[in-house]
Image 1 (cartoon, one colour):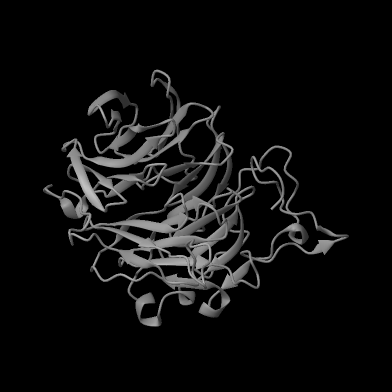
Image 2 (image 1 turned 120 degrees about the vertical axis):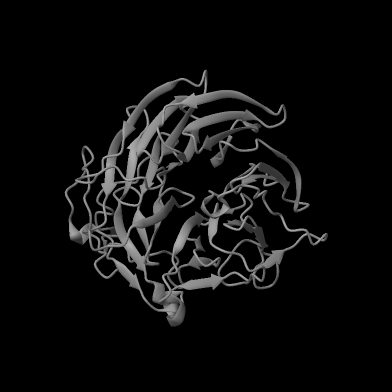
Length: 405
């Protein structure tokens, strides 16, 4: 992916944006060697396949993964002399947690086309419960006891995306493969509303507590905004795919911490949208010679975007202007033999407290944690300092940013 550079792609300019000035930009840092960053492959002996979903617990000391063969894995970092805070880190290996019963947390897979089934999960705010599915019935797991409590909602249709309502851990929004969205009350065991607006399966869901809306994305490349009061559709728009036909690629959505802007990730673009008018403010498009985007996510402070590609490259963007400031090549974290087997990241997860730490879930079942070198502290090289201030800073401020880095 040598053609990746800070000028790649197209940008829809934002109002009042300063013109790009290379002297004010972060210089692109290229990481090709394992000595240029801290990375750790998490221990695993369960023979899992592709990692379909990946998340840090909100406490920041565990990583939860769901593999495509329906097995869940939970890694926990313990506090010790090398890791006094007991938080996830690339410098200390965690423990793979296994239930004392020996019965792994495994989803129901009684579904004809399990190989093609979508695996997804959602984690409750208190880290206590996981709702998960791998094409069959949905499962509710106790993450403390590492055991399944119940199953519900047998297919068809099958669930393809799950997210908790921020205000109520008993209510979830479930995207389905029949293009509907089910608002489901877990404790009562009933569907409260069915939302219809997409024409293909749902691939992403995100709530804004501040705006009281749900944003959905589908394999139809459409974005929809729904009111959580009455569940009426407020507006809808198709992605701006420049010069391309509508692709059935998964489209993901994630709210910025300001709760008014959201990130849109498609294999052919990364974009930032404003919710009220459903307007695209920024867009980055790979060059034709670049590998497609596999996934992307905001850092915990929404100042960075971590994006993975199908050639196993990871690029780090400033969220405010989609300027690429760091690129991690597969040679930095994959052994030479593995890097030739078309192994790539499927999903990216960001640490909930450390904006410079992220993890990759790989197509071979591996999970890698990344941090910059301790001597550097951040990804990339900042603009030169002039009179005590960074010369100009980024070309535009991070959307909704408050305070300083």
